Image (cartoon, rainbow, N blue to C red; front, side):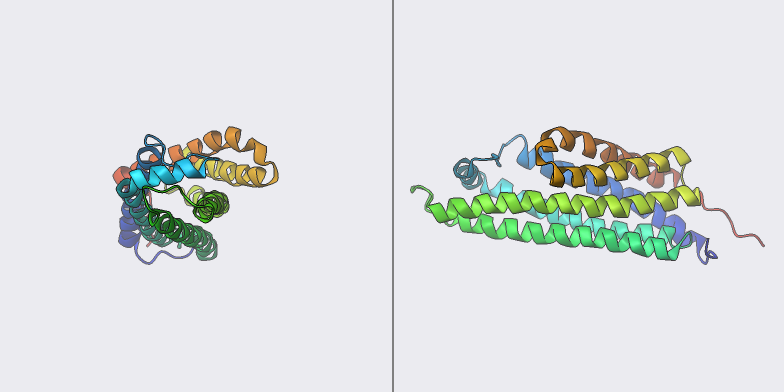
Length: 237
């Protein structure tokens, strides 16, 4: 490990990271289960129905987009906090994890921008008229590229998360079992997304199974860092 220069700043970063893990999980679950799932705004394979749902629930849809932007902003601060915490363990690996996670966040923001633009295009339609072919085509392309982008986003999340959890394991700042679970769940997410790209028919089976473990990991890690903190050893005199 590198010589520690500021144990208080590391300890503070650990608490901040814990809080942000939980905050990002809360906003992410809100978008996934409140905006998309109960209201069934997005109907796979039915662009016309999806467009109708967006027009009927436009305010909710916009809230979902704003919520996702907040989530990615939280992620940026979380990445910074993890870097501050883990830099003394290995600066180079911590930086590599930061780069992977920032690529993830950047791609996610670009996907949201495209999603927002396509929504604006659909919402300009006259509510009393049928959607024209160009609007339906735009919506279909939007959902296809959005889903594909987030498959790649998940790959970079898995890469960055694997390295961060390895550094947590190496540092012994948290229980080894929690760090090992983090490495496992991150690698599972990473491998599963490559499997979806190569074997798209596996998506319906893989998706529920691959995101569950990493969600459990981030919630558990968030609570541990927030309430227990990091077990940072004192410098020898």
